[in-house]
Structure formats: structure tokens, C-alpha cells
Length: 322
Image (cartoon, rainbow, N blue to C red; front, top):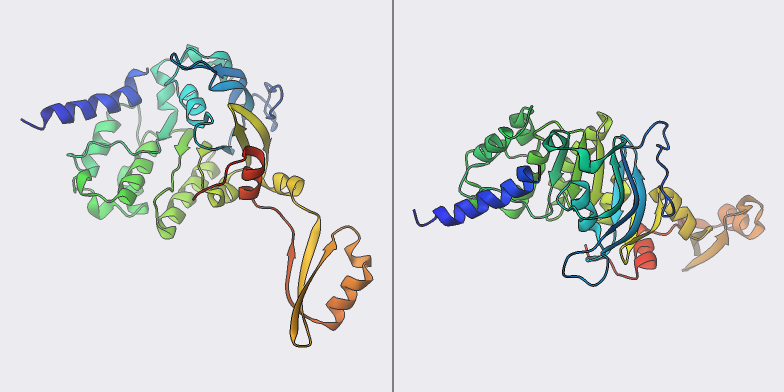
């Protein structure tokens, strides 16, 4: 009996989150780049918390296309989580326009949550229930659900399904959190740091599942500080700074835009190792480059492509800590 108040507080907190609450950085276009209506259309989105003197979101403009993995990146406190909470209807009182499937997001009721899955950064489970009991509880909140046994097997938790969650490691809780985000067969996934705290093998399993979800027609909004995940998963990324989107494009285009069109050549010269850099433009006509290629032992050759982490720092002024 002494544990009942704590358990009830935990129950209420999760119910509030799960049930009760119901591209370019210029002007947003209402139509999908792929043709038709964009899945989410956000235009001039502004939001200020009641006790704040300044807006947290300061006029966001972006679209999320059907079937894409869209990354929303930026340093802590910049407004990523606030934007995500608006899109999953946890926050109201915003100004601007947020359309989902061409319809005002405010007009949707609880049926909206049958279409979306949410994986919060901090896993919230009933710690005194088993993994299986947790999933069965949340299944009752949705119109239709999937075979979670199969998902548990995929993420390596099937053999632990009858263990209480308070016996789980952090990584196990993260994986269970991911399974819960998929149990209602959503068409749209909100994922906040989905692989944070996972070892490379388990991170790979979750990333493969995200790719499979996308291949099946699903759409994902991903927020993370792991630039390797962004590089691997995202079709487009938006960088936020001071409550605004300062850049939005595909990872490849961003690297081309912010990188240098040069190639670094490392080669052996007698008993030394030398490096020379050449412009990519008309590289095949550069006599010095051709001489080295034809007469020296080439050790490495690299384009001077920038990384997403370097772009993150350049656009936001904040160093990424994985």
C-alpha cells in the first residue's frame, strides 16, 4: 500500500502524455515537393511559455513530406522540443498555422493519436509492471495494434518480456520505449533521441527498423544530437538557432554548400609522406595532380567535404557532444 501513491502519480503522468491531451526557412509552401499536400505544413509558428518574456519559437516555417525522415536539429534550449510538443498537441496557445494532412491541427481530436507514434527522449514506463504488461496496457488505448512479440524479438527484449521494467538497464528501457511508439501501427513517428544510450549493435537494430518503417510508407520527425544518425537516416534536416530555422536541406546538399571543392592527396615521396590539396574543378587537367597520381605511391585521397557536426557548429555556434 505504501507504494500506491507513487504508482498512481506515474500512471497519471503517462496518461496525460498519451491520452488526455486528446521547406525552407523562408515562407513555407503548402504543397509537397513530391506533389500533392505536405503531411505537416508549419507557417510562422510562434510560441511563448506563460512565464517567459520572449518567444521560444519565433516564426518557424517548414513542411514535412510524406514518406521522409525529417531531422530537426539544434542545441539544447533552442526550441526543438517545444516545436515537437506543438506538433503532437501537447502544447496549445501558439500562433501561426500548423496543418496536418491539409487540416488545422487544432481540429483533430483523440483520433489523431491513432495515426502517430511518439518516442520521448526519457522513457516513461510503469516500473512495477513487466515489459509485456506495459505494452498490453497501452494497447488498450488504441483502435488497432500490432504484434508486439515480433517487435520485442527484433529489439532483443522478448526473453525479458516478463521482467519488471525496474529491473531493466537504460538501454533496455530505450528499446522498450521504441517498441511502444510502434504498437498502434502509426503512419507518423515522432522520435526524440531514439538511439541515445544504446550500444552500436542495438542502435543499428533501431535504425534498421526506422528505415523499414519509412520503406513501408511511414514518415518520421527525428530530433537528435547524434550527427551520424542524422547522416544515415534523414532525407532533409532543419537547423534551429534562437527559436528559428536557419537552414534546411538534404545532408548531401548541405555538405556541398558548406564544404570546400577541394581534394587532399597523401602520397609517399622517397622516405617522406606528403599531402597536397587541389581544386576539384578541372582536376583532370591539373598537371601536378596527374603527375603525382602517375608517378607516386598514393596513400589516401579525400574530398574536403565538411561534416554535419561542422555545419551544426557553424550554423548554431554550439559544439555537439555525442
